[in-house]
Length: 490
Image (cartoon, rainbow, N blue to C red; front, side, top):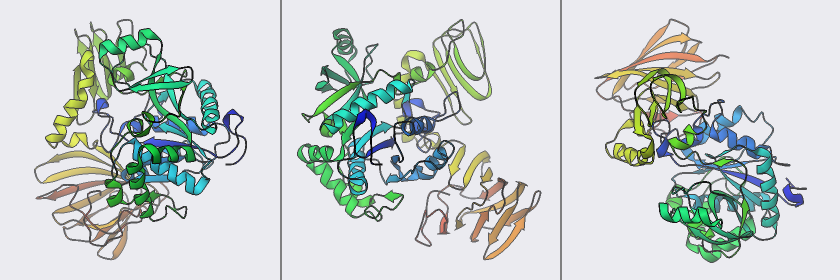
């Protein structure tokens, strides 16, 4: 990655994608196991794919580092596969627990220092932002890299067009940041907009690795020391292994701090580059609705929607008809297992709603009915007392783990493709319209030996049908190396 870089600078340049956060304000589309970066826009690409392509389009980029939760590795790789036809290296740094952006960036900087050199300039990109003007973004990156090579920690500032209270603010003078302000009340936000001296803090950063680590050592030594301990106990970190999973016990003890609070608000090296490139963090239903053109009555719709004498509503209903009569200022979002109806001026309260649902243990906060796995996906079609019906879709040449269930039996019927079924050490092939029965307590594995997707209808029966009733003995995806251990993921 050596050579001329954006802004005419020399030395390594590495985009880093931070992919985390549940995006609870966008429930029921966003879930813990399907967070905001994986939400698809109208053109069909996800926010994560948009971010990857944006980084890949910058000058001389040959590698993009992604920092994400370990449970999202395979899902992220699937997203990259369709937009990165083998041209760029895509190493992953995996977090066992979420510890905010401070530890994430410290780990990324230590990785880059070890493998790309301390003079590397990192461009930090949240995975869930939307940027409409790619050329303007590239020019802003040019400026940021030049400032970073000059020893500055660069943040990108968005000139506010409204007194938004969901964002932090930067008070600036020229390219200098005078102070950071946390999310202000409405009256103060209005003063900031009127003054012309303030920007929204976009959460995009650029800095040299050595400068960043020196500043962390000066202003957040406990955080850096904690991440260094985690790195020291993480196999593969030092030898270029991919992916690298940070040591769970050490990383869990690192202070849970944002990079703004841990460093940016304290350092005297902060500079700002104006982010005049059509930025949005898509942080609420109002922001997402703004991406859709309104009809003559101000309604913005996606999917199967019919509105009669209704005004200024946002409706998303991809699978079934949503009909509105005589209403206004509503947000309606329909999914297979949850329906949101909210007043347009109260959509920020969806985050509190999701917190209540989590306390109640509602599964809709965790996953959709369609759940992606490294081998493919499964969809819950129906469930009731003592039974559950799933549709399993297994990718070509892929396999589930060798596993066993204590409490449930399973019937499999092949409806597309060819299945290889391993049961108590014996293997056989099943073709369309053929079936098999897996009693509780039986070691078994489902594989797809073919070149097209395998589709199986699975009927579970038993006293307990929870996803945590699984014992893995072998897994080609490396999700366990401890035979006989119990895992939540199937």
